[in-house]
Length: 377
Length: 244
Ligand SMILES: Nc1ncnc2c1ncn2[C@@H]1O[C@H](COP(=O)(O)OP(=O)(O)OP(=O)(O)O)[C@@H](O)[C@H]1O
Ligand SMILES: [Mg+2]
Image (cartoon, rainbow over the protein chains, first blue to last red):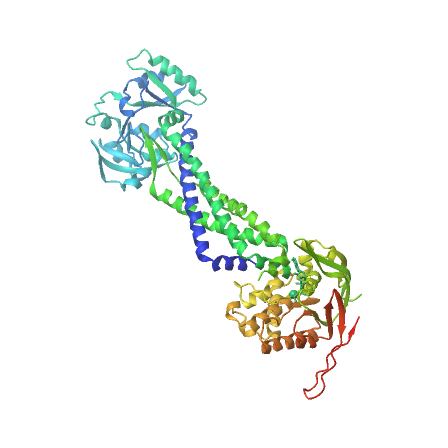
């Protein structure tokens, strides 16, 4: 019986192909949008979203405008519940929302190595720690910019030597370039000797992040510059707040794509079934049960959806995997990564939509008035 | 009980304000192994009768038994199962599935039965052989002539070894020569495979091959004797004798 379904689809191959490619494009967009959404979720719910705090200058947003004394680190460390503090100088090529954002984080190499969840896939830590202008580059940036260990990379006032490429369990980390703190502080135009953009605080086990945050701000209120401390996830979400709205909107676009697949496949199946009402009458005269007739139609619509959805999903995942896309603003970035969850939801949604799209024509085919359909010339 | 039994069967259709009652309280018995031909003016309800016997249409009143099963009682789904196992339907226009080859078309009904794949293949091959189309198994309907298509349709109707085969003007759209081939074929299937046949036809000659000839007139069946074919120079047979 599946031969019948396949051959029927093949007979109208142009129609089949158009429907399949339509479904593929829509599911491609769905997966792409889904990966952006996932990236955002990871930022705010990821492993270090709630266990790290970011200390930033009060009422400042772009990293270039936040200037905190480096020696705040010592004071912050005194607050109970703080396990470690890493002063970070941030430099970005673009403070506005951009798809090709390059973000440098300058910090102590040893601290980076011990506290960041990163692992070198190319190059060596020694190379990074021993040279002043050395940098290690996140895998996404390396992919996007075509960088390998040993390359020289210049952007704006900054020129670094790529000492290694790293990957991370935190995807947004892979959009960063790490250099030593001093190197970035002395970059021309930044003039940041003794100053940093932010302090990243690692919390001790069991410490309440909100309590620690307010204690840090209270303690530093007396200092030269007032601070605002937030959980890392919340900090990044607020930094990206414009983008968050946009992504929320894009989310609906994803659902619209699913609706598009639904109506596309339903239309094709309805057309195909209505052309062949007599065939279904003949099948039932031969002895095919109405339920089985229904299954034949459902198989047709589901097959269209799965083939289209599968290829769209696969193509999206391949592109996400190889493209190293990220969107960012003000030094925070969202990585678009492929994921198992995305693959599973792309394919299962396709299958589900296929079944739903086939229901109406399937009922039509199953309940065909046999005699009337046969009398039609 | 006869193989096919109609008792007090009535069927009417609504056409606008008008009610047409082609079958009004008719009775009919067909014995196992009989080859019954059914003639009658257009619109008298011959096709309607076949559709009722095959359970693709519903009686308004009355009962139909086939091989002891009261098919007028069955649900649509049960009727489908019943047809798959017990009934072959030969259409006027073959109604083959255009995307399937001759072999696949004939195979269709066997897919509805519990058969091993060897058994299935044997049956399909035998059915195609019976209609003389073994060498056309891989052809698609559009690659076959009208007569060949009709023969594939016949093979499809007999492949599941049904108890009854109904045929609605099986030669209606064929030329004389091809018609004759099909008639011979149907007669052979009836004799050799002992298939009970009920065939509607407008062709007096085709009706002659049947073992029993019926005329449907004014909603009643009239039995006709076999016409004695006489050479042209002799006096023609004095029509048919009607009995009821
Ligand atoms: N589905 C239907 N709806 C309305 N009227 C119908 C329907 N089916 C049959 N009829 C009417 O019932 C009558 C009998 O139709 P049927 O097709 O059984 O005739 P028939 O004897 O097979 O005629 P023919 O020799 O032309 O094939 C006709 O008057 C026809 O118009
Ligand atoms: Mg008719």
